[in-house]
Image 1 (spheres, rainbow, N blue to C red):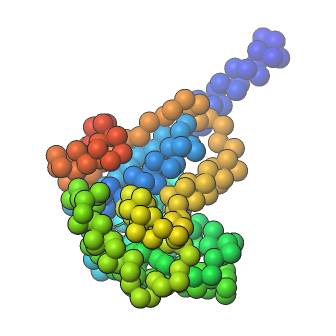
Image 2 (image 1 turned 90 degrees about the vertical axis):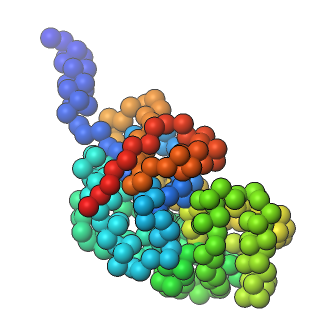
Length: 281
Ligand code: DGL
């Protein structure tokens, strides 16, 4: 066998022996799909698995203990499906369960949705920023706590906005009711003088247009894109050569499959793939 030939065959053999890496993402429902979409744009060649915990939606109104329990079971499921990178595509779970997950699964690489956004804020010229979040995320104070470690110039005001997730999950996006509720929240006196808004829940990027209609001069921070850019940067630094170069596709799971959820995923994100049910215990 010629040297060139041998090298070629060795390359094929090495590639076939290497593991195909998969990224697992999870959220309580549809929201994490905003992160998946952004990730698809920058890492289409990486196979992904998405899990929506529709049985326990909304996470934002649950206790930390409950969110930790759901998250541990989901990550174990994603690990069994072959994922070695986990994107916690939910702010409530990132805040309540991020540290516990990292401890419980030391062999997995985790990316939460809070740190990349906090880092972007710390490197910005923002003076006063409004954070919209679920009760769980705002209660945790993880955004202001992590920001205070990196910056003492950006002021962050947080507002719990619990009505927004049910409105989105129930298909009221774009309705007058959604506009009224969002207007009510954005007109909160504590938001007076903000220059930007952080959608501190992965469902909220779907409200970008509406929010910009209500607050014309306020910048909307594209959180999913910031998170996806950080995942891509890390991924590329790992020189994972064995990944397919074509679009690799995503598998979709929910804990409770309903027609309305699948219709909404189709209407909002154009996802026509089959959703499989995986109830975790
Ligand atoms: N999308 C999630 C978040 O970022 C959870 C929303 C919910 O289920 O309350 O917090």
